[in-house]
Amino acid sequence: MSSRVRSLRLPSVDEPERTARLASARDRLLDAAEALFAERGYAGTSMRAVTQAAGLSVSAANYHFGSKPELLRAVCARALAPLEAARNAAFDALEARTRATGCAPSVEDVVRAFVAPAAAPSDALRAGSRSVAARLFADPPDVVVALKEQLFGETSRRAMAALARALPECGERDVALAFQLMVGSFVHVVSGQLDVAPGLAAPLPRDAALGEALVRYCAAGIRAAVVPCAPDRAGANEHAPALEGAR
Image 1 (tube, rainbow, N blue to C red):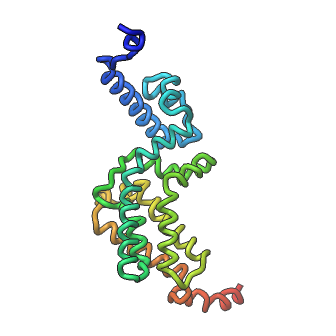
Image 2 (tube, rainbow, N blue to C red):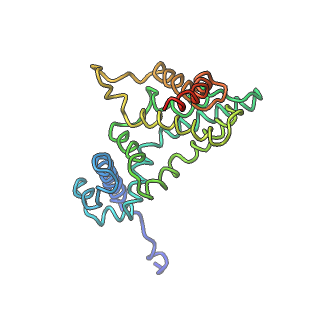
C-alpha cells in the first residue's frame, strides 16, 4: 500500500456523534446566553456566567463563538431570524405591488409590513427571545448599536424608503420621525408587552385583528404627527400663539 493511500483519513464511525455533541453544546450555550442577556442585559452578563449556566467550559464558548459580541449576535440572529424573514417577505410583496400598480403605498401598507408580523399568530419568538429583542433597544453599548444595524438594517431601510413614498408631502425629518414612531410600536410588541397588559386576565391574543389594530393606531399617529395638513397638526399650530401669549 502506498504512503499516499495510507495517509487517507477515513471518516470515523463516531463523526455523527461528535457533530451532534457539538451542536448540542452550541444550543446549550445559546439557550443560557439568551436567558442571561434577557435577565441581566449585555453588560451584566459575562462569558463565565453563560458557560456555568450551560454546564460547559469557557473554552467551549470560545470554540463556538470566539467572543461575547459574537455570542450576542448569534443569540439575536437565532431569535429574530423568523421575524425578519416575515418582514422582508412583506416588503417584497409591497414593493412588487407598488411596481405593478404604479401607485405609492399607503402609510397603512408600510406599517403592516413592518409591525404586523410581530403580532402574527405564526410569530416564532419565544418569551426569552422577546426579552433579548427588547434589550437591544434598552442597552446602549456600541456593540448593541452595531448589532441592531446588522439585524434590522435591511428592513429599516426598506421601511424608510416606503414611508418616503407614502408621505411625499413630508421632508426627510418628518419621515424619520414617522419611522421612529413605528419602531416604538414594533418594540412594544416584539418585547412581549402585550402579554403583560395590566387589568387583563389573559394576554392579548396574537391574531390578525391585533395586527390590524396596530396598523390603524400607528398610521393615525404618524399622520397626526407629521402630515402638514392633518387636523391635529393644524389645530396645534393654530393655538400655539395664544398659548405662548398666555404664559
